[in-house]
Structures are given as C-alpha cells and as structure tokens.
Image (cartoon, rainbow, N blue to C red; front, side, top):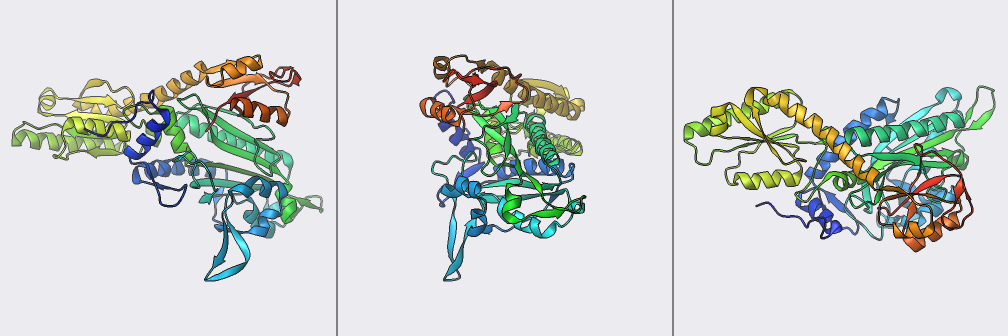
Length: 477
C-alpha cells in the first residue's frame, strides 16, 4: 500500500510535511532553510508560471532578467527598504579568493538594482509606461522555515513598472492585484480577499500595499500575492526621472508586485485531504490516470484491455488532458489507487475485461473518491465534464469553509476568545501600537481591509478609540 499520512486532526503541521514529502513535491536540502523542489512540485510551478505569465503579458508586461547580486550600497539608498530587509539579507564578501571592495547582497527583492537600469532607460514620457517582470529566485534568511510556505530561497515573479502619474501607478497596482485574484480563484480554486494592508504590514519602501488573503483548512490566513504602489521613493533614491509633456523633469511613479512558490503551499492547505494532494484541474500536470485491471485475465483479454486503455488515453490527450496509463504489473490496483490519490491525479479510470464486455469503465474523481460507471463511448467527454465540475466544486467548498469561519467581533474579549476561529472582522483605531499589542497578546495580525467589506465607523475593540471601519484579523502563515 502507498504510504499513509498523519491525519489532519492528529497534527495539521505533521500532515502537511508528510504530504509534501510523500507526494514527492519537495524535500529538505543540506543548505539551511532551503528546499529541493521535486518534479511533482515543479510541474505545478510550471503550470502556475505558464498561466500567470500569459495573464501578465495580456496586460502589456514583458519579461526581463536582472542580476542575482546587488551592490550593498544600492539597498542603503532607500532607508525604509534596507531597514525592512536588513535582518534577512545574505551578503557576499569574498569572491575569486579575495575580499570584495564592496559586498554584494543576494537579492531579497530587486527594486534597487532594477531602478538602476530604469534610470538609464527612461528619458522621456514617451518611454512610459515601462512594464517588466522577471521570473527568478530570491533569498531571505529565515529563522523558522516550512516547505513551500517559508524558505530561505524560493522561486517567484516580481513585476516592476514605471508611470507618468500617481493615478497611472495606482491603476496598475490594482490591475495586477486583480490578476492575482483572478488566478487564485479561477485557476487555483482558492477564494481570496483582496484589500489594502496596514501601514505596519506594507512592503518596506512602498506608499501602499495591497494583498490577496486566503484561508487555509486550519483557519489560518495565507498572503497569496501582493501589489505595491511604490510612489516615488525608489525613483528619488536612484534619480529615475523623465522629461514630461510640460518640458520639465519629473520623477517616475512606480509599482512592484509579486507571487511565489508559496502558492503551492496554499494549494495544498486549501484543498488536500488525509489521502493526499488534491489539485484543481486547471493547474494539474496529470489530469487522468488509466489503470488497466487484468490480474486473472487471459492473455487475449489483457491485450484487449491494454489496447483500449491506450486508445482512450489518446482520445483524452487530443482533448488537451495530461494522461498516464499506469500499466506497472509489479503493483496491484489498490496500491495504484492509493498512490495516485496521494500525488493528486484528478481523475482515475479503471478498466478491466468485465468493463470491456459491458462497454463501460469506472471513473473516480479525486476529491469525491466515489465510483461512477461510464460508457466507454462517452468516456472522453465525460472526463472533461467531471474535471470542469471538480474545478467548480473545489472553489465552492473552499469558499463555504472560509465564509463559515469569518466572524464580526465587537470586543477585545471576543477577539481573544475567537483567535483560533478564522477571519475576525474587528474595528481597529489604525494605530500601529494598538496593532502590535494585539499581535503580542493574541498572535493575531491584520491581514487586509477588504475592498468588499463595507466600511462604517465604530470603536476599536482594544482601545475604544474611533475606528474608520473593520479590518481582518487572523493568525497567519
């Protein structure tokens, strides 16, 4: 039998690590805090990357690549930025057997070095908007790591844009947040709350930060993507200017936005179960496994089953599906069922001599794990219908879970009592000191002020001071 996972009820963290390793998504490495992404996990990242890349390009963004090493002096040019990242920096001081004249920082993010290029490329308003993205790795020295969710090195994309006006930059910031929301909900089947982060939770060096926040099965929040209006802070630090339509020199207005391999962690924590990984079909690498069952069959029957299995696989591939025929005779059908449930194959088709005789096959959706008898003539069309329905059902199930664990709270006692219960909508006076004290005493952080949440004045649950409206508090990854 395939390896069993620690049940979620016995230990959610243990279940997660078990799943990541036994489903062969990732493994620990000999480099502290870093992970090895295995082929099963990388296939998911490739599909995430491929889909998002097209979505970015559809908005006019083009890909580029910038150096991994950033001169230390670049980070020091934007004071808030370097202060925000300083504890996480990995610094290269020696190379080629010699001490470097100036140390290099391994990129934690690339605003600074990209601005150095922007300052050379942009001369006039005719050069704007400048819209670039890079797919890269970054390094942030983390003290407590967890596979996919928080590692010292991780893969991501970071978009960087320059604009003539603050209004243009804000429009792009919100446009990219909407791209992330669309991807999370339509492809990952992961419902999210788009909204604005608090001042203390914003990106170091930004004017405003927006995020999409998702709820995991343990009711904790996961920040699944961020979009930042950088204002002119980096432009002033690197003298990124342009001659405007009025003939005068102006600083550009900038944005940056990013998402990373933590999306794979979010996918696992949103949909998976005690049998293993559950993957929304739109980002799955393998949609269908066909398992021929011919243990006690005659040679002629085995040949028929295999021929029909491969013919069906060919029909499914023509429809654009990823298909595997698992004809490994060293493993029994039960082992194969468990194995493909563990690694998250979306749909299982069982086919044996008795099925052939009836002109049918058995289909099992990964999320439901219930057998359905289907005519072989209709199998290819039925597979697509089942996958489409699975995609919708996963989203609705996750949304229902989130909505049933979202509560308004109206006192500090209630906030503390419900700290483990999910998303808590509470009035807050906007003071970072209040926010810090709530975090220290309860472990709750502000996630975002959702655009969808109607804002009405009230009183802060902790201080009683005036509040402009409710914000989401939650424990988070």
